Amino acid sequence: MLKTKHDQAIAMPTSSTLDGYNIQFTGTFQDTQAGMTALVKSHGATIGTKAVFSLLIASKLEFDLSTNKILQANKKGVSIVGEMFLYDCIINHKKQNEDHYRLDD
Image (tube, rainbow, N blue to C red):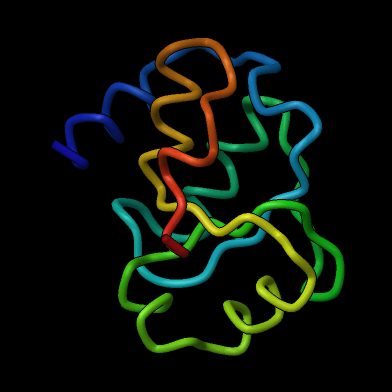
């Protein structure tokens, strides 16, 4: 299902759906991090720095291992969501409720 959603999101025309998000990635995804970066930028997001970001897209493994980025996001109160959040936002042309995609539940 994740692969299917990724493929659907990749096929969507560019948009401003993710406008306002300053995103960082940690982990392994359906695409390379460079590919994921290109995807979110094509839908209006900016890429955050290690020190400044408003949303962390993480793999379950990274979350479970409590890596430095995970710890930093928790300390800053930044939402940590799985990659499905991005795909659903892009496919549905609107921001989804982050609470449904959080890895910190």
